[in-house]
Length: 167
Image: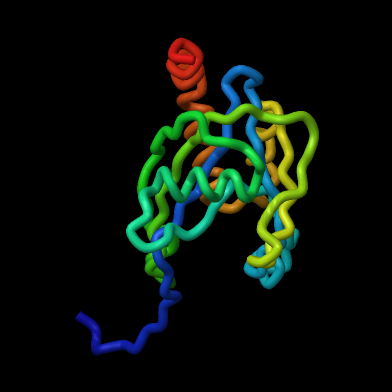
């Protein structure tokens, strides 16, 4: 064991991140908004991302996911499929992430969304699955967005089969 060391960490409550997916159109809805960490790292200050937000006190993951999805994309969650629970950066943060995929009805083009009272100015865009998956090669996606797209890539056919069969 080492001598005692003083450490700092970013304190954060539980968060949920949502990959909106339309199995009928085979489309994913991604968002862009200003991210201070991306800007400070010298990267694109508004990287493509998935919906995310803080879970309020004792709020169920599904409730938070549905709320954030509506606020950030204007889409309604028809079904929610858990992907997993993760520590986002345990070396610097207490943040715990619930990652989910939500069935939605995608829209054509783009929408401007977000809550002005929360300082949100969000661009939501529908992408074909392959175009969204190709964004992994750009190196600019947040980790949870990349994980969600990789998960969808591995589970897409099964998910489409289940969701479309039970429509």
